Image (cartoon, rainbow, N blue to C red):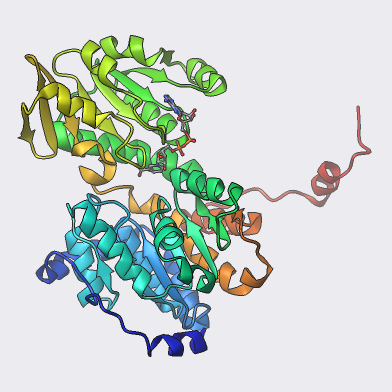
Length: 433
Ligand SMILES: NC(=O)c1ccc[n+]([C@@H]2O[C@H](COP(=O)([O-])OP(=O)(O)OC[C@H]3O[C@@H](n4cnc5c(N)ncnc54)[C@H](O)[C@@H]3O)[C@@H](O)[C@H]2O)c1
């Protein structure tokens, strides 16, 4: 790693070393990063080991992740392992400016991210990360990988591998691999069971509710809640909305997921039927225009919409804006009201990830596992990149099990070991009735 690093010294880095909103916010950022760290025992144990073993020594990591307290702890872990990390946001609205400031001035990690940045700034920031000539990309939504492949293709050959955090990113990467366009191997961290079973379900479930409540202070009890998508994220949101007394309806395109939702006790409807029924609409599909003009026309006065899927494409915002003909105003922090001929429809966090736009994202205790997988995936890449092909890999099962084991340990929980007889029994095909 060192040799490649030295070569870079001769290259001209034209962009600023960092770009954050206000370095004066660093003190508050540090307090919050330290608070999150208390809830991240698995990542902390990896950081302590990394500090001893330095498995990432000299590795340049370009990260495009939500700039939150939990991400800050991941950056510190990678840094402890010897990596040189540069970070940009993976969403224009998810950056916590105090955390960005703390990373720069207290932890010495270059960050290019400002909450509320426009599209051009967002991409300028991604380019700044690319300027650091990463050997490993750590993405949440595949925007950095996509930028490198589409606009900075000459750099792709120097990337050893990447990691990807979320479902939408993995889908994009698989499409690239199928097209023969993927220039280096990527580990799909989202596919670790210790990631999606917990982060997507319990993390997004709780934090989506949190974002909606912080933005609106709505009473969920007794309300008709429509959730589009019954994947890991949708399941978690449905569980939490029902737990608060909401009447939950699921909109799905997959018959198996729809059947599962039905047998989990929810109603299942088409988007068309749900539009007139719902009070609160939440999208979590990874798809586009799930609710659109015809649905907005059918919605009740006062309906509230939010998105928890990766991109702000799940609600047809262009149609919504056209229908409101300029009658749009901010009625609360993070809530826009669209007046459509006297009927008011409400949108939280501009249709971007509501849990990050209107709240703080997932609780640290759940990101502990997701980011433990990220850190271990980086270590795995250093050891194994020579054996990997240019395709999308899952997380090794042993790594997944290790993260679960460490998490249980942090709760002080032992699990039952199999007896030798049981191990022999389940491994044998000879036993029968
Ligand atoms: N907010 C967050 O912090 C957060 C966290 C994790 C994942 N995500 C994102 O949330 C989205 C969903 O992730 P997931 O892990 O649940 O994915 P998933 O693939 O498990 O589930 C998505 C579900 O949406 C359904 N769907 C697709 N198009 C639909 C449509 N038009 N109408 C209704 N249902 C439709 C699919 O059939 C599937 O069951 C992704 O974009 C992912 O990247 C967000």
